[in-house]
Structures are given as structure tokens and as C-alpha cells.
Image (cartoon, rainbow, N blue to C red):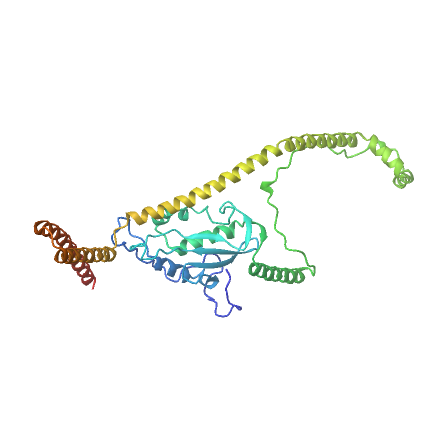
Length: 387
């Protein structure tokens, strides 16, 4: 892991260099039940943030990148020597929109580059970690944010993505610094061992290579064509390239190897043409998959919006909002009855009709006022019980 500081001073010397590091506090926070919710107990949003920002391994390499407390960047290094930045966003639902904010799944993306990995989509969003794929999976995982970030970072460290392009200048600077340190360390190690400097290279992945088997002829231990020649004749043969090539071409084993080589070339030519004939089909399939992925992303976004609306509709109503609406309606019914009385006094009319309509409006007014008083009493009583 990295530190956002300019030097390594103040680093914890007792921490292990292996990833992930040991936790400072091995006792996890206790999950809290959300008031008015039928969902199982869950960690609060602040507990998730505290676990992430105070994690022994992640703390030194994490900083906030948003004006609020929703988005952070964690920088780390992979086993391939590449620097990556994981952006972690934990959305917050305002209390004035949702009185009991639900527990939302964190969003994680690799920023500053374009790369290929089974865990990220085309927008570099982390989609391969099942615990953060949606809000239900995150709530059911019952894990803290620090555990999820550590798991994602560890995956990218041990199985690095294929980096196509680095677009962030800060990440480019970090990568250049790493390359210089690796080059210097490699040069020092090689000069101490044999005085030579070699470039740091990773071993090839032989499991990913398919090497065809070719039945080559056995190389003979002796050549009858050369057995009867003395030293001068052999030297003359080496000096005369034309005679040497003519003799070589008449050797049976060389003729067999040449024939095998020609056969491999012909087979490769046939396979190359077969692959080229499928190029258009593969392009069409690629375009189709790209369109389907875009459609899926749009549907996922629409689903997430509908899910948020569903959570909002299924949430218990806010008592304060209901009280304000009832108070407004109570005042409107009172004003309506007062206007009716003023008009009857000024214009006159049938007393029975006036009394009947006036009493109906005043009944609504008093019913609304009684509901407001009852809700206020209930709310204040619940508040006092908490203290």
C-alpha cells in the first residue's frame, strides 16, 4: 500500500508487510436495528466509514476526494508492479427525503486508467464482487466497508488487470516513481551479484500458450556422407558454401525437416484463412454484445431508480411532515368558515342552510386540530422516552 504523504515517516513499524495487514481493533462494531424498519439489524453508515478510514492497512493510502464524506480514493500496488487507484463511494440519503435512510451498497471504480479485468465493466466499475452488486446483497452480507474494500484491493493486487492506458496525470506520476525505484533496486541487486544490470521481467504464463506438437525426425549421430572425408576435404567443404548447401540438401534428415516445415507452413496458412473468414462474424457478435451491455447498463440504472422510489414509498411516513400538512389544512378550514360567516352577516340568507354548512366546515376544522394535537403528543412522548 501507499501513503498519501511525501515521506515514510510515522509509518507503523509493527505492521506486517504482507497484504492485508492485521486490524488494530479485532472487535467489530455491533450492528444496530433501524427504527421503524422490518429489515434485519445492520451497521450504520458512520460505522462503515469509521471501519474504512481507521483500517490499519487502508488508512495510510486513503484520502477523501469529495466535498462531503461520500467518496474516497485508495491507492495500492499490484504484484505486477502497477499502481492502481480504487475510488470508493458510499451514498447517503438525506433525512429530509427519507426519514430512515436505507443502507445503500458502496460503489467502487478503478480511476485514472482503462483496463481489462473480469471484475470491472467498460466504465471501470467493480461488478465482480457479489457483496456490492446491489443494496440487498450488501445488507445481507453483514460486513463492514473496510472488509469489502480490502477484498477488492486484494483481488486486484494478486490478479492485476491488463492496463490499456493511464489517463490520470497523478497516477502516471506515481507509476513513473515506482518504475524508477524498481529500476534502481534491480540495478543494485544485479551489481552486487555479478556486476551486470538486467531489466526486470516477469516470467511468461506458459499455461496460456498452446504449442503444437511436431513429429520431428531423430537427428542421426553419424553422417555417412562425411565419414569418408579427411580434414582437408571437410575444411574445403566448409569454405565452399555452394558445395556445403548441395551436400546438406541431399542429407535425408534435412529433407525430412524441410518437408515438416513446409507442412506446418501450409497448415498455418489454412488456419489463418479460416480465422480471417470468421472476422466479420466476430465483429458482428462484438457489436451485438456491446449494444446488449449498454442496454443492460441502462436497465440496471432504471432498476436502481425504481428501487430507490420503492424504498421511499414503503418507508414509514414522517410525522413532522404530516403535522405541518394538517396544521395548514386546519387553518384553511378555519379561514373558510370565517369567510362564510362574514358573507352571511353582510348579505343575509337562509339561517338553516348557513348553520348546516357552517357546522360541517367547523367539524372538519376541529377534527384536524384534534389530530394535530394527538400526533404532537405522541411524537413528544416518544422523544421523551428516548431520553
